[in-house]
Amino acid sequence: MKKIAIAMALSAVVCTAQATPVKVGMITTLTGGGASLGIDIRDGFMLAVKQAGNSDLTVVIEDDARKPPLAVQIADKMIQLEKVDILTGIVWSNLAMAVVPSAVAQGKFYLSPNAGPSALAGKRCHQNYFNVAWQNDNLHEAMGSYASNIGYHKPYILAPNYPAGKDALVGFKRLFKGELAGETYTKLGQKDYAAEIAKIRASGADSIYFFLPGGMGISFMKQYTQSGVTLPVMGPAFSFDQGILKAVGKAALGVKNSSQWSKDIDNETNRAFVSSFGAEYDRLPSLYASQGFDTANLILSAMKTADVKDTDAFRAALKAADFASVRGAFKFGSNQHPVQNIYVREVIEENGVLTNKIIATALQDHGNVYAEQCNL
Image 1 (cartoon, rainbow, N blue to C red):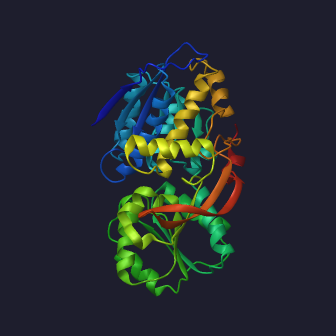
Image 2 (cartoon, helix red, strand yellow):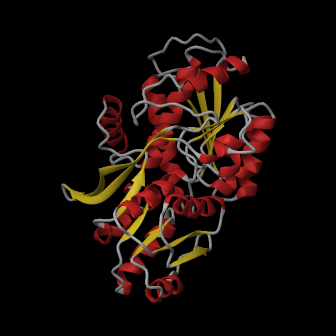
Image 3 (cartoon, rainbow, N blue to C red):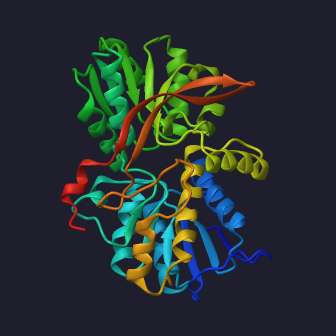
């Protein structure tokens, strides 16, 4: 089990209104399948911490290896032994469901930089749980709406059989107006998609929508390209973000995907983030990196006005979200999930590098349908 304890003790000190140091426990995926997602979240988060230069903020980072029991074990240790005030970092919804309810019940804050399962947005919402990324359905709802608007009538849809995969296809179907050629749930971590591609070929579909994050999406796209099936492909950003594109190659050119963030969002914070991330890590930032960056800056903004030991005041400071987001204006809805624009991006080649550019706004100031089930 890999552990990195990072105490930011930099010469530049940012004045804050609180006297008590804040300790953050980051549980994320740093090895094995999907490690690139956790690495990007970590790197975006730590870039914001470094830029702030706040010596009152300490971050302890551990690798969950995408294993729910290990994530639970790490969370228990961070709460009981490390005495963290805030937990963050989890990539996968099944790990979030294993960790978050217990953590917030023990009086800890959990700020999600990625996973947004529907259960935690609705009936099992909690005053100490904030999602800084999106609710799982959101990016899929956007592509369902977009697919209808551009005239697709019979897509084939597929996703892994775990909470985020189920939320994904529910979200797509919610705003898609038409019939489906087929719907398939794959195994989480699956590498061979020959059977699924055969079903797509025989289905009479006019398009494909898939949510297969990390290495799953890389494997699917490579096999799909080799299969000779030429249906247009759509997905969420998770399947066509920066790290994925590097691995998939030019087979991804022209693919449409949905995201609440893109490197070409034109605001000062985002421009500076893209530039500084590249300078720090020698690569373009991903969606995940942007979410880690925003999560850290949300914490730092709350530290300026409230003491973390005053739970009510710190919670109010988090909910105020008084920070400059890479997305532009940022606000939480009633269930403490973002209300934000969701864009459609197209995969392009820019200066010899595959990347994305925004071509449309699919949903504007969009929240989530589960807020009405939340009693906050």
